[in-house]
Image (cartoon, rainbow, N blue to C red; front, side, top):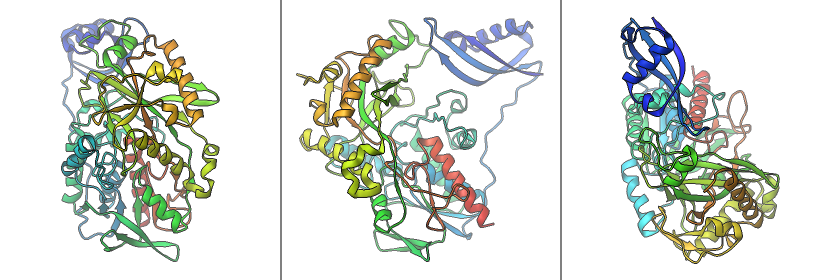
Length: 518
């Protein structure tokens, strides 16, 4: 017999199967010897009170043997000679669209401007150590997209958009730990995600699809308001009447191309701010109400949101036990992001703290039409580059100094390897963003005692939270509202916000193409 139960236990008991069995036996009022196995279905941390607890959803096997179910790939066809669909971009939207196309009997041709995960590492080192940005291969561009080397968080609130478990199972089938299907806030880690991405690529190739690196699309070919193919930077023409556009939120050249060709796009609001770094020990003490974290608890995250001056101010992409990385996609700009390894074992934590923007904030760039938000974003990134000495060093300020508008006399060493330059960040950020963030941090400090400290360092800017552009599409067919056969997809098109939601959107676009091409 199997019974599902929900129970709350201490962190120590949650990690000790024998102790957990005793608690479950007492809860069910049965002999512990009758429990053959306990399967953990869901797990989350409740740190609201001083004694931190673990919430568990369990499947208890009573006088019944447990047979572990192996998660396998769906049935895939050999599509080597099937109808071809071009996918622009090998991020999560593009890769999961490719898998779904194979499942539907169609051949994906994935074109990626960047390099494969192994070769991409050299370009990341060049940014970090030599301050050199390769416009096609960096933290945002390359196999796996931005998530590959910037954390691999899998948490999403977009459960209404599609089957989250289906995406998680595909990741597990390609080498991810089964814990991602259990934990409330699943995380793979930058050190482990590359191998999983490689495995997905190999599946695509094994079943007849193609993944082509170092291939930047410079034109989308259109005839009679329908796509007919693409032109690459080498002048090569690839033909297809179905194109999935999954280029990510930083593919500014694609936005410029669509605008130049008169293909309808829209300005979209997004959020922009800074990335703040604290010691992980401090965040643990605040969140877990203790002087030192228990060995049975993971490094603590935090999530904050406030309304300030009529705008949302909130944490974004919080990285416990992580580091801050340089994520510029072109020379002459500074961009920050954060990531954590799978164990989240770095001594620092960091989070984007960003301000909700509105379309009217971009009024000074109205001559750029739907690209106004993009120009707003670029101006701040380029100003940061100039103020930091025209390098990948980042403008920085101690946290209390930032709230007081006071230049920091010195900046303590942070996890951001290219280094920092002490700057009064009012020189980087528009005044309304600076003031809103200052008030936001003061409010955070009232509820998270110890958070507002001058030992914390603010890095600017955190500017690539989401796409500044939306590419409109028909709600039923998911095709572009104007161009037949063009499927705007994922974060870059304005329809996702993270690995899982982007993967779901990629699958949805591929599903629609599969229906049409039956």
